[in-house]
Length: 250
Image 1 (spheres, rainbow, N blue to C red):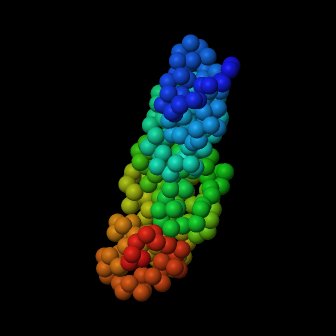
Image 2 (image 1 turned 180 degrees about the vertical axis):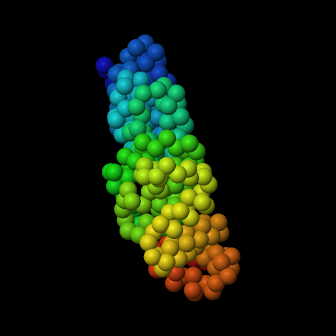
Image 3 (image 1 turned 120 degrees about the horizontal axis):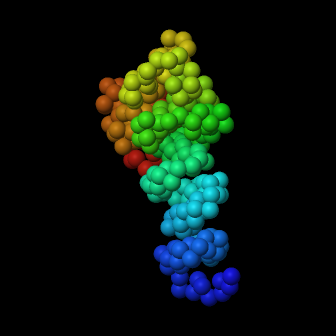
């Protein structure tokens, strides 16, 4: 296919329209080629990556579609909503879309780690497998809430399978765990080991939540928690919770 001149005065929107016309004619492979060339020439674009993933998925290429979404989320921190919308559409098509859920989980981990001032976190393959296999009755919101607690409670730079709630690990012993974020957080912390570890877990969780509620403003968070600002700074350092440096009072 001759792409010469195709991208003169082109915009991502025009390229997407061109790709969609090709796809309607049963030429999805050519549509993908057009999009890939456009990304090389025009740069990263949410519209182009979503259309690329769409055409790849129509051809049954789930992993390459997931890679397209992964590239999008790495280049555009605000693309989560687009990815969530895309996965919702993909789910209606049926079939195995686990690789797409992996991308969403990775995106939430990166987004929330940055939001809480954490260093980049990775997730163990066994933990990711358990999260992808879990049915998530609360859908995307429950997934995000669970990952938020995992990010807050992570003691190092890797989320292990053991850190997951028991019902997600698959060893809840038949118990029904209420779909309530605070109750789930309580169970996770209560099962952390010693009294000291549980106490520190609750304190870390509470501080992280208050800091987020106060827009990363340490002075306001300290007031909400009823502690001195200097004391809160010491605890933030001890727990590895670094507020956004854009906050003038951080």
